[in-house]
Image (tube, rainbow, N blue to C red):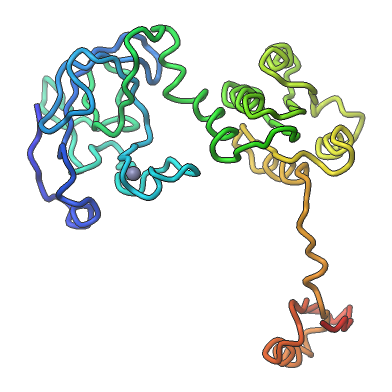
Length: 302
Ligand SMILES: [Zn+2]
């Protein structure tokens, strides 16, 4: 059942060119595994949909892939800018394909795929076709989590052979990062997790060293990572928890090649701020640090 166009939001209509083929792809897909995004069989398709056919095996994915916009065409991003996520609604016309059987009340979509249902309707940009021989039990792993971690290491960071990698958080995403780093030829892969039970599976997936933040003898994790890597820190750090404090620790654990001190040519008190601007406009300073209490005054020259 292909829905027709309805201009409910002029802004969205302007952002999504009307020439886009398959205005709406309508898939009624049968769920074959009850996980948050699993393997589906295409039961029907909307008008103009040529990418998949009835009977194809597909995996629904949360992030749209229009394959046309600069972000979809980039090797460094997969966040589609043409069809951004519309909370609970179909991406092209901001409507819903679900309603209550008893009351007719509209029901919103969930994460663009609504894969907790036995049947769902998704835009064509939210499915990936699978080879029919792909193992059923493994299919759901590809839609989220594993691909997130492997993609972060292989695509976004593009880990270089022989490099050192630290992974904070050894859940599915973190362990997938380790696999991706190993595939890219990383020499040292350090796993960080408060649960040492994760270390065995980490080792099987390519990790070489492990740190339990609760068992570092009083050192910070970044200090331990710098010791393991010979003093400089890891070439790449991946934070796979979603914690601001862990992100800061991961940043501290990364090998810094940026020389910031070279940019500071002057330091002076606030009362000298006009002189600081003069130096800037005259091209005589790179960066001048203004100390509000005037505690420090130096002039290095350029
Ligand atoms: Zn796109």
